[in-house]
Every structure is written in C-alpha cells, then in structure tokens.
Length: 187
Image (cartoon, rainbow, N blue to C red; front, side, top):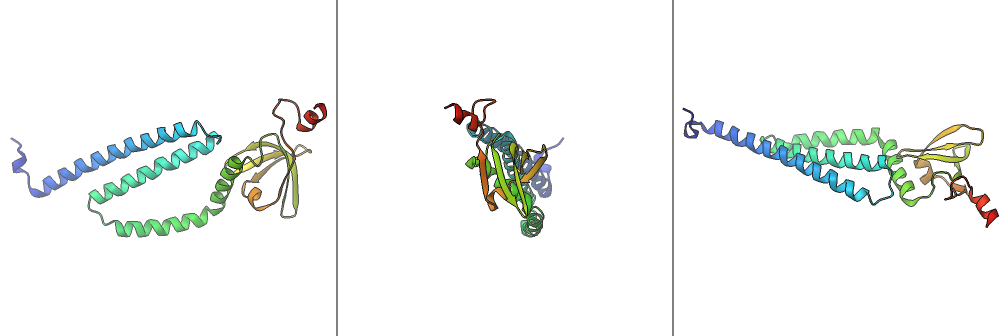
C-alpha cells in the first residue's frame, strides 16, 4: 500500500512543486486567455488596423507566458538573478538589432492613430535626395505603400513620416470614385 506518511521529505517537496507548477501553468494559460479576450473587445472599438491589434495581442500573451515562466522557475527553486542578468544582456542585443523595426512599428502606430495620411490620399515626401509622390494604397504597421503616377509601387518605412516633412497633395474623397478635387469642383 502507498501512504503519504511513508513518503520521504524530498518526495513530498517534489510533489508540492509539481502541484505548484501545474497550478501556475494553468493560471498562466487562463490569464493569457483573459488578456487576449479583453484586448480583443477593447480593439473592436478602436480604429487600428487588424495587424496592429493582432500584434499587440500576441505580444501581451507572450508577456503573460514569460511572467508565468518566471514564476515556475522560482517555484522550482532556481536562482533568478543570473537568469535576469542574462535576459537583460540578451534584450540589449535584441534592441540594437531590431531598433529600426521597432522605430517603424511605433511610427506606424502614430501615423495610424493621428490619421496623418489615409488610404487614397496623394502624398509627397522627401527622403534623402529622392522626392516621392504617389497615391497611398496601403498603410501597414511597418511601412506605407504608395503608387506613383508612373505606376511604380514604392514601400516607404513609416519612420520617414515622423522624421521628414509630409505634404498631403490631395485628400481621399469619402465618396467612392470621386477625388476631393472633383468633389470641390461640383460643390
């Protein structure tokens, strides 16, 4: 027969740790689901594009999982000091490697939030020695796509809209098939 009284102290400690880890993992999963659903409901009421919303939700879910992992590691008795120092060094290296991407993502959120440009607008922006003029066909998280009068498709990183002067030559008309210039001539 198996009795709890017969278990050694080490086995009891291990059993308690297994139970704590299981509860922590389950709680982490549930919290991640709650965060995901809550953010999804919040984003239903915002003007952000779906790809930004999905990205924020995904990052939030990973943050919850990472925090849960830290709790699990702590429950197992591992010293978190060296792990945190290592992660700090790793995050510094990652931040240097991804600084341009992060800059474009933040700029994309600003461009979308401020509605400085919208789909269908004709814009002009000067980058370096080049002058780009075209119609906005897509505004993404990292870049905006314009189509020039010559029919070229140009991908512009969103950070240029923050650091360079932007001219909106023509605002997209709200009525389909009608430019704001045509609308002004009729009105």
